[in-house]
Length: 244
Image (cartoon, rainbow, N blue to C red; front, top):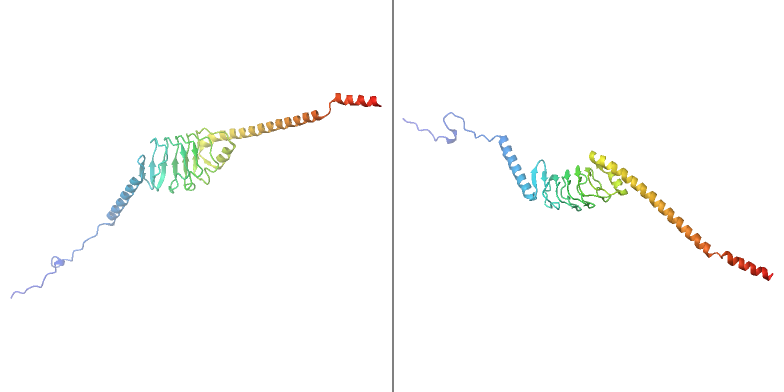
């Protein structure tokens, strides 16, 4: 007699063989794909935020390269995660207030070899504590407001600018962290400024002394003119003698 077997378990496979187990993909592969997706999304974000005249790259923060692009103004649509901003060799003449206000991660700022003539007070507001390097060399700066670099902790480069000899300039230089090249140059400038201030004080004193003496001499002459003349005195004396 033929004995019928019960229904076979399809999931068991061959008789006596253990059930098949489906292995998961290795964790390293999943991590790789996730990292690639994150990197791609970051690159897309930077590309969208990057100014058309600049080149942006991601290196633990955006590095924005805007060198030699004939820029006359600082780009307004810079990535907010900018760490390094290179704006050298352009035609920028003025740095307005809060020009880099949104760049809270900014560490290095290069504005060298431009035509910068003025910096507004508060130009580096929002970056004063985080900024580490500021290059303003080879520009057209002749003077600066005293509050321009207020609370700035960056090492500043100011060499090769046509500075005017002002006493306030010496106070500004004294409060800044200057790079070695700027120190060598500005030491001579500071000495010259100090000599200029001393010479100005001496000159002002001499002018004051001369004017004061002139006024005294003028008052003395007016006093002498107000006195009766000697001829008039002798005439009155002769008249009195004839009476007696």
